[in-house]
Image (cartoon, rainbow, N blue to C red; front, top):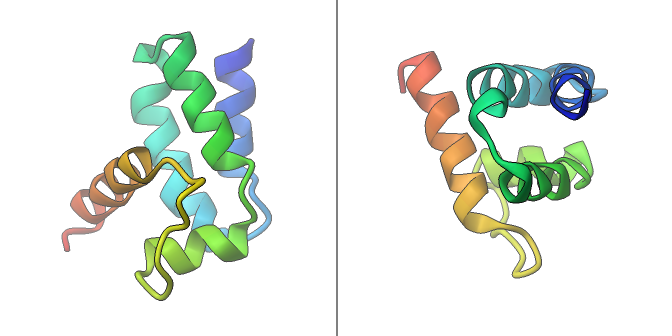
Length: 84
């Protein structure tokens, strides 16, 4: 149930841009994540879309409280999908 909720949250963020970043990522990775990894993803998804989008686009540095390693993995996954 937790994984299903996370996938739903990833696809229904409030901004289409973040839906397209987090939705495919969640579809591809959530099923293989253990509980600590799901905790990390949930914490990242708790950040506001406006901030996440700025970090994904490289418009602002990632603050120290954010899991930069996971965010970098999300960004790399997205870039691979869109062919950048």
